[in-house]
Image 1 (spheres, chains in turn blue, orange):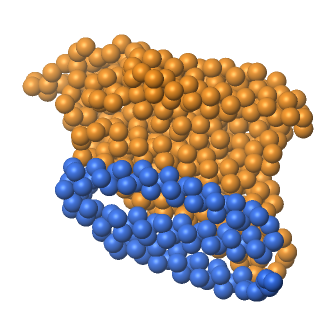
Image 2 (cartoon, chains in turn blue, orange; image 1 turned 120 degrees about the horizontal axis):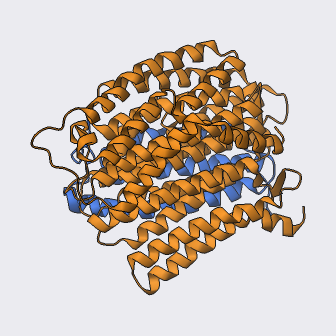
Image 3 (cartoon, chains in turn brown, yellow; image 1 turned 180 degrees about the vertical axis):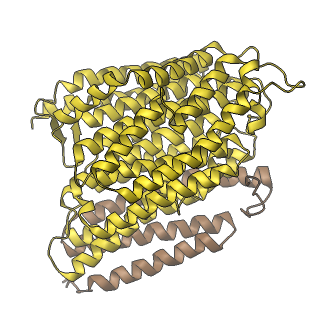
Length: 105
Length: 485
C-alpha cells in the first residue's frame, strides 16, 4: 500500500533553489570546463525538481513532462559540449577555461 | 478547430522538418557540397512559399494547434523574415565553407535545424514549446559557432556561449517552474497566479525575475551581456550574423507573445525591471562600443544597444499592443537587414584571406579597394546609426512614436542619449571606409559574385525601404489588424 507523504511545496522549492545556487556558484567559480558542465547539469536538475514539485501541487502530469524535456535537453547539450571539450583538449592542451582565453579586449 | 485546418496552418513547420530529413539523408548517401547547398536553399524557398498556402487556413485570423501553438499572421511574418535571413546565411555560408572548411555539408543541417527552432518560437503560447524552440536554436548554434575545425577562437566562443546560454536556459526553466507552481498552467494565457494568496504572488514575482533574467541572457541585455563580444568575435562572421539576427529575433518574438498573452506587464515590478534593463542596455551598450577597435566587437555592443531599443516596443504592449507589435516587426526587419549586411561584408571580404578580418583597420579605404562592399558597409553603418533615408531611421522613428504613445519619457531620454553616442562609432566606421586606402593595402579581387550580389540586394533594400517605407508599413499594419490586435 502506498501512502502519499505531504511535503510542503516551499520545502521542495528551497531545496531546488539551493541546488540551483550551488550549480550557479560552481559555474562561476570552477575553471575546469568539466566541472562547469557538471554544475550546469546540477542547475538543470534543480529546475527538474522544481517542475516535479509544481506538478505535484496541481496533481498534473505537466510538471513531469517538462522534467522529461529537461532530461532530453541536458543530454543533447552535454553531447555537443563533450565534443567541444575533446576539441579543447586537443587544440589548447588544457581543460582550464582561463588558460584557453584568447578573446578579449 | 478541424484537424485539416491545423495541418494546413502548420504546413511551414512540416515542410521545413521534412526538408531537414531530406538534406540529412542526402548527406548520408553522398557528401556533395553543391547538392547539400541546393537542397537547403530549395527547402527554405519551399517553406517560404508554403506560408501562402498556410495563410488560407487563417479564416478568423488565428488557428490554435493544440495548446502549444497559436498561429496567426504575425507569426507567419516573423517566420518569413527568419527564413529569408536563413537564406542569406545559406548563400553567404556556402562561400565561407568553400574557402576554409573541410567537412561542409553538416553546416546546412545545423542551419536548417536552427531555423526550425526559430520559426517555432513566434507561434509559441506554452512554456514547453518556448523552451524546445529556444534549445533547438541554441544547440544547433553551439555546433555552428565551433564549425571551423582548426582555429582556436571559434572553439572558445562556442564553449563560452554553451555555458552562459545554458545558465540562461536554466534560469528560464526555474522561472517557469515557479510560475507554474503559482498558476497551475504552463500556458502563457493562464500564467497569472491561480489564487490571490500571498504565496502565489511571491511565486509569480520570483518566477518572473528568473524568467526575465534568462531572457536577458539570451537577448544579451545589460547586465547579462558579458558573453556577447567574445562570442561575436570568435564565431565565423556569417554565423555571428545568424546569431545576432535570427536567434535574437526569435526570442523577441516569443517574449512578445508572453507579454501579450500573459499580461505580464500589468505587474509594476516587472515593468520597472524591464525599464531599467532597457535604459542600461541602451547607454552601456553604446558606451562600451566606443572603446572597441574590432569591427565584430563594435557590432556586438551595438546589438546590445539595439536589443535595449527594442524593449521600448515591448513595454508599449500593455497600453497599445497593436502599435507595439507594428513597431517590433518593423524594427526587427530593419535590424535584420543592417546586421546581416554588416556581417555579410566582413564574411565576403574574408573570402581569400588566411584569417577572418576583424579589426576596423582592415576595412580602411574599403570604398576604393572594393566599392560595392564599401558602399554596403557605409549604408549599413548609417542605417544602424538611424540617419534619414535609410530603414534604420524609419524604425527608430517608430520607436520614438512608441515611446511617446506609452508616455515613457525616461526611456526616450535613454534612446536619445544612446543614439547620440552611437553616431560617433558608426560614423567612425564610415570614415574609415571612405578614407584613402593605405599604400600597402591590396585590392580585394576575385570576390564571389553571389556574395556581392546578396550584399547589393541588402543595401538596396535598406535604401529603398528607407526612402519609401509605406509599402512595408501598410503590410505590417494590415497583418497586425487581421490578427486581431
